Image (cartoon, rainbow, N blue to C red):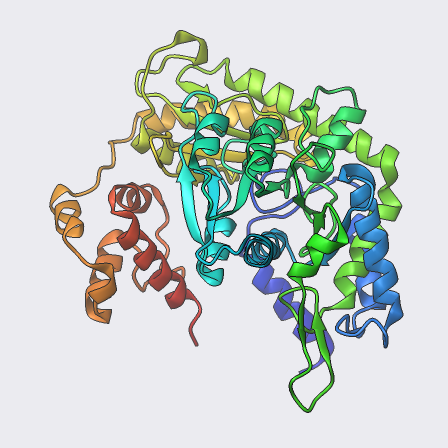
Length: 487
């Protein structure tokens, strides 16, 4: 196939995706709104595309790039002696932090059945890490009004088996910063490590502080914080995937490494989950950080804060909308109220059906707001990730949101079929056969059909998922994604 035809087919595939530039997709993408940045990242990647980061003695350039990247993160967030590793993304950074804590607890404290204490708002990547690494998660409910982790409840959950305590800066779901100093102090008092998930805020918060915003302490300068994760492909605006996991010292980081000399091949030392590591990812992140610079990032952080201020003020002026918590780092969560009262009215309950209709109406108007279902007594909501590119979109978004909310109120409510939810409550997800799973998926609207099995409007599907038991919900989602990735 000629090269131009290959590229044409790739461009055609992209036409069905949500836009990654322009400020209308409020999840998954981070748009600095800077001309030429995408081209710079692509050129830097191309320069290192054939370089293998597996062995820095053969390709010393990748060690230089990684040391520069980790050094830049440490300068923003570290303490004297801090050391870290460049990873493929926040999930890998978190995985490595949990692995380090598990092995540290074994070696230093003799813990054989380790536990991970985390707030209910902690990212799902911690649960993934716990499942992969055979660590028991201990979930602590958060304050239902502020959505911040409860430091006292977290302290009470720490036991002799605790290997790691987690705080978020900020949490993904609601964009609020947990009380890191109090949580870290409670962990330190018991001799337990404390990880701060700053995958989202790690690069943004220091520059917000530099731009004059009040930012509470959250990084390795806080006594008791022993590790931290920060994604460069978020508010540092590098391409995905680029992240750093940072530790207080090299001795702690050593528990992250895997080394093996018990085979006839080359001696293996892997700092990360990956063996082969693409040099291009480090190169493009290095190039973007160098190009934007500290003053550039401070200016971009100011634009994110401006967008957040304008959006939150506008949302609080729309009747029937409530902003959850006090957003502090570029993320905003809102819910829709059944009574139509505004944020200051103090009344009205979150209305799941209305909220999901609102998400569908906004998508039809060209906006993607990420639906988040109810959990642990916390209300369902729509999540928005703000970037510098969204500053110029705030007024249009608020206008469309008001119109979409009125349209959503005029639609009939969507509810989960009571007979199906009753039946689902008695199902054992582990014993369901393929035909039974397919039948439930089809009933939920996730079966085979036009558009890859996705319905035009997601409200009926998400209402049903919200009502299902967690284990069944997870099984169905697994099977659905499995049906997407098949040949």
